[in-house]
Image 1 (cartoon, rainbow, N blue to C red):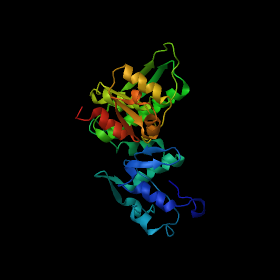
Image 2 (cartoon, one colour):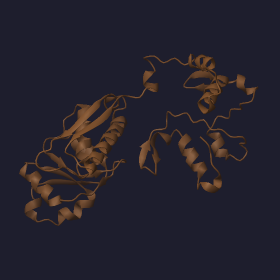
Image 3 (cartoon, helix red, strand yellow):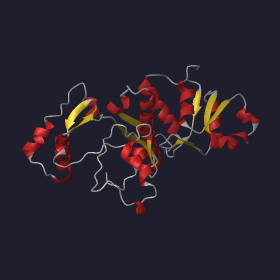
Image 4 (tube, helix red, strand yellow):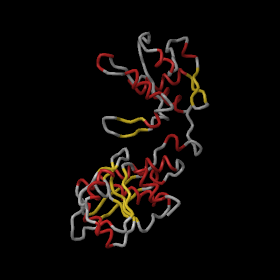
Length: 280
């Protein structure tokens, strides 16, 4: 990682500290993509010709390693094991400009042992989502977002549950008579995926609608009255709507709203409790 000049970045120190802080980097948010990223297991290697201008707070968050010949015989502690700095520098040199020979690279590689006990630390899962059927572009994107969000929520709720990491899922939407498009099924797809992952059924009298962002926010939808009436015809008693649609619902006639238990939410976490809570 290279720090660019202070003139070109508003707060490079703050960004660096957030990356290195173990209290924050597990939930680092990429503000450009609006995507949360877990950086807690990332080893950051920062290089500099001169660290005199590096702020003291940033220095305190790092291990200062001098790559001179005298320091190369030292060692650093990494995950309760010891890795000779000289070997670490060989790996880094080879990654940057191919400086190491094949024999040297093999010698370094032999120092790292991967077996059943630590395989999950090095190998990513083979999970994924395959989408087929008569879906429009927006709904396909919504399904992909739902898969990503469901995986993140599953990791937060049950860290040992590797369903999304190891399962190849196939989502098929039959063509039927009406083309399917739009983002309003996002929260429903997330809930279905989580139910599958946890092997836990969703309450039978529940219906929901709402677009979901990558960070789990629930956005407003259209066709509220039609969706409410469809739920009533299906004998649904409990409906979840986006908070931003509250005024739309309250403006409908009483004959549409009566005898319905309606919940308005703005975060998926609220839907999770309603769908999987112990009180249903």
